[in-house]
Image: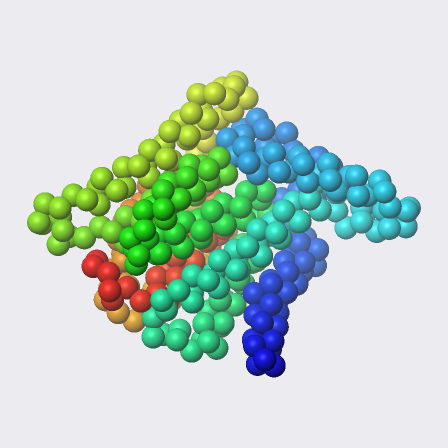
Length: 334
């Protein structure tokens, strides 16, 4: 009984409390020179009048959370009110609480994924916790460019990974249909939803089955593609084109000329390389190679319209290679 309580307490401290403390230090311990969210009283107008306007769910949450924080502040006495406003605006505090909530969900999902049919590499709980801690540090560190959609998008992505792994091992159709609905909903959060398709394809694509003219993989992936494409195009048809843009700008030249962007690219490549080296079997390495191949459209868009300095854009790939390295795929064909 005492041991069970001790395990639950350790789990809470490691999976919940430690990430919370790291996130508080990230948002309130120092200020990023990259964004000006901390001085915005309300959600900035550019969230609703540019490429960000397609991210319906996080934008609406920003409005609701800002209103909530304003009501909380107005209900406090002057000293407490001044203390709260001294450390950020209602929008910034609302952004912090929203991202903190989804950070906790992300750490719980990571813990669940790492425990689900683990490879021999992380059969030891202490090794698994070290890898989990490393991934949490990566998540928190990328918040030097705070966003109202990254933590929500990451939650959708990790949930999709868990559904894909469970479907691969059990074959339960309810998991596949849940993945379709998840991709459809997460398209209203951020374009990262397409990476769930890449991960699914990496797991189920098989050269052996392709040579035998078994195209079941293709028929399985078509519903996932439609679940992403239809909402994606629908949003761009429905929203006012005078107030929205497909991309914020084209940064391919800056990405290969700015030392900051080159540093971000080099950091991401080095991290991916060392995590890839953790893959202890050929199956794991091959699956991640296939994942990179199917992720080429996403990587291409990062190169064209994203900034390499925003390492958060590479975060899904960093988490994925660690998850692949820690999972036992021996019972799955590759």
